[in-house]
Image (cartoon, rainbow, N blue to C red; front, side):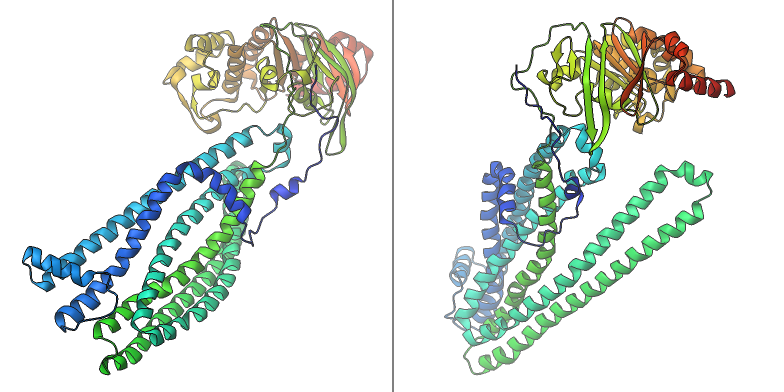
Length: 624
């Protein structure tokens, strides 16, 4: 039988995962990887591309109707040799077919083009957004599934807020990028069509207007360089505001008990003032840039009127052509403005994409056996710890712990803080990798058992019992289809939880609030016992599960514990005297080493570390 568990944990740069990435460069590799999630929806992307071509064509044709058809052809009666894309002929056909006056026909044609432009634009945006949302939904699902399989050691070292940002904010940034790319294409198609028409009408005037584009480009680049720094500061201070708000709201009880309201308000005001200053600076720069682009557009219109008007007087251009130039100016300048806007979005999205793919590429995981052992329907529950050694960030936590736990035995583990109690049971649950030959279950090396199969056989009750959103029943069954309503209720009855559950407004269908705040600590603990009992594991682990129980429900809890541990191999990390005394044996750990092992009476008689810890707790209990 072979396993692939490493002999030592691989060193990883967790600081790099937490580092703030800049996304300062255009990363085509990242964009190609992103296309993997967009590829299944390429058909709708193709439809969107066709629609954007239609929309862009109609956007160019509408000004031609006004200038060349109405002003030159109908009002002034001048024949234009400039390309009108068949609009004159189409209007003449409509006039002949309907009997409408030429001007009315032109208005009808313009209205049809306007409706077509609006509808094609709407359908383009909807198909684009639909494709992007579906692709990013798949990316978010794959990212969530990947993060769910990262081991406990990963979340020991990486802030949960950083992980959440990748699934929420960073994916949202990619949405803004992909949607913006579609908008950018929608600006550049009419730009090239309009440029072609303008060159056909007047090369000198077109070249004059094109001279403004490098100026627009340089100013836009400078502006975006300045605003990118300002936006970064805005995001940083806004993040600091949110963090400060969360910290104060989460610790409101401590804030009010320590009369820190004024101090906290002053601190919040400082961060808020910084955010206000950066927001105002960015608003001033944005306003200045807006004034510049408006001025450039008005200057361009002035050039058209000056040069084009002179050409019209000399009959080198028609009045309609001059008007058409003024209408095409926005099509000429908008792509530069939009490109500048998309640049910041692009770089932010590059940074978000780097963070997302950094998380997806994070291959840290619990190593599984190549050919896992198939466990029998029911385990005996014999556990062997054989010279267990473990380091955490190069710090030795367990230093050669050896111990045999018999089937059905109730073992209590005690010791000072940091002695390795919780680490030992986390290794038993395979939250961390460790070498072969250290921990055995019914004689089978834990590294030869798939973690999924192992954890179905081990029930863990922690001091900080986690409540999921949903009903009481949902929190007992945890999505296990094998745990029926009747089985969940029977488990609750066994551990004395049925009474308080039945007293709730909706019984087992009662919706629990965030972290189960509508239940008392004792009720949450009984619910934890019911959850474990319903799963019916052969091994039971209680990690200080009774440390925070109020005395009023202690007898109820102890009775539930007796029922829960009956017939199961149980390992209890506990401080309660009664829980310790009822254990078959007690293991005393200190600094990662076994100091004592025996029954309660044997260890008291030995007068060692356990007797000292017991005496200290007895005194505390007597004082209470």
